[in-house]
Image 1: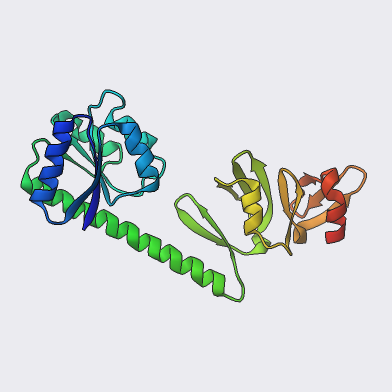
Image 2 (image 1 turned 135 degrees about the horizontal axis):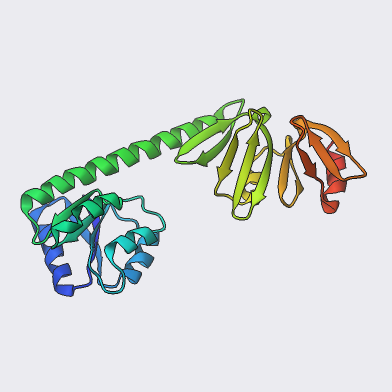
Amino acid sequence: MINAVIVDDEIKALQSLSWELTNFSDEIDVNASFTDPYEALNYLESNPPDCLFLDIEMPKMDGFQFIQKLKNKTFPVVITTAYNQYAIKALKNEAIDYLLKPIDTDDLKDTIVKIKKYNKRNYTAEKLEDILVNFNANTSHKKITFNTDGKLLFLDSEEILYAESDGNYSTIYLTDGQKLVLTKKLKEVNDLLPKDSFFRIHNSYIINLQKIKEFLKTDGYVVLTSNHKIPVSRQKKSDFLDMI
């Protein structure tokens, strides 16, 4: 059963679409429906459906603006409209399909097939991710797992030089010269790194202890094997000396 949510500012259109969806197909169950797009956004944040049927022309917020405001769009979106000219724009805005009102039964059947394919692909990807993460957690030589750019990256400790904070983001500097940008604060990155190999030497930096080449006591810097100079904060200096 496909659990669906409908967003349409016109109550009659919403009721009509709900009736069409549930009567044209025994594979769709309408869990919730909204005429207010802001209420819908709040609901979807904690109640992701299997599919969202979204009207385009709404006075408070049009359908394309609605899609952009979705915080966690893990579900497929189907645009519903009485205007055919929206079709191309709809598909460019990450909608998997569009339906012209009044909805044709054959068109709806085709859309259901697309919804199933989309959800099956996402389910398979999530299951594979779980398998990889669990396997890595149980191996004797555990790698460090980072989730970035829609992929999982598994790294050995010796591949990492240091990590640097950039507000709500962090950058991991690797020994091969690559940079890995994560949508995580440095504290979250620190929790992922093994404590016996990495140390948060400054509010803005975590270093790999195995990559230290020099410690400049007077200047308060460490020099890594890559010749990067990383400052040591006064608050961290004593703990750092204990670590090395």
